[in-house]
Image 1 (cartoon, one colour):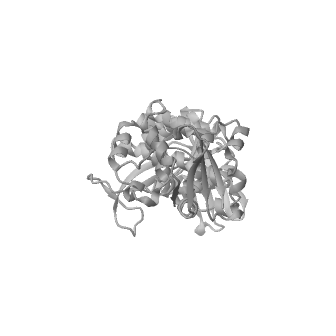
Image 2 (image 1 turned 120 degrees about the vertical axis):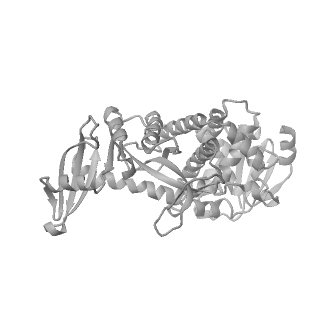
Length: 431
């Protein structure tokens, strides 16, 4: 394969997906090749499975689940980017994903998370949990559910994500299936968070996490505190109406009491209730259950509103690989979604190098404008691959970060040789 790769790279290549080569230095900084070794079981550098993993990472960066569906001359440069002289077929990709186990994908999530923790992508003080339903196009018989009352029912896969609520960066995910309850999936997700986040975070979650099993687990594990919205049922309303409230500002009051979700729960929780309204006829109550000891006003007005960061994450990043699914094979789902976690981390660091307006683009638009819009060519000179990009606006400032790239990486104590490109170095030119 090396000889066919060298033969192809020796020719001057032109294409429209050349912008993806901007991810190369972020791969080297993150250690993507070593991460793929973890996922594939530490196989040798010559093993093709890791390169097929790279193809899937780069497909996700283009917000396409199957670039191989359009395997045409317009994708020149995409195959070489993955260290391959071809674009792998559906069958080859399916075979690689099927062999990877759920545990291998979870281990990859943990290792990726620890790397991101070390490089400062997480603050780790507040973590948002949220169920996320992905539309499925699987041919399996599955129950259909509605995302909104006004929409038709669809086949969906239930997933659970953990996001750093202050940086908006994903820590890990779990997939729910028929034999796994919300409680079990959430507790499994805590195992990833425990490995990645070294301090005691506050978990803020959705009302679906209001279960005795989850709160009892959090109460016993002193590594976590959790805050969950309480349902507006008769029991909660009766308690809320009987509490003594402390005023904080006009129309806003807080009270709290000890509480247990179920009759079998041994641990006491805190039920914090906020009351809004000046007149008794206008009172509105909202309850929250927590295992933590934070000041009630702080947790209600400053911490819990950060939960909406996770909704922004799905809206901005979902197109990478978390908005639709073609298969319900769990090995395939865990594998593809975990590789998309690598993609997201690469794009996040690339965005940091761009002016603010570009950093705030949702990922699909970012991909269209940076990875697919600009023409370029690839050639080899003295064991170095030169990537030339045409028409990139100067205000992006990419020239400062990418020209003379090998020297820049060496100053960061990063080996500029790209292992999946047979140790070629990569440099950039902008015209």
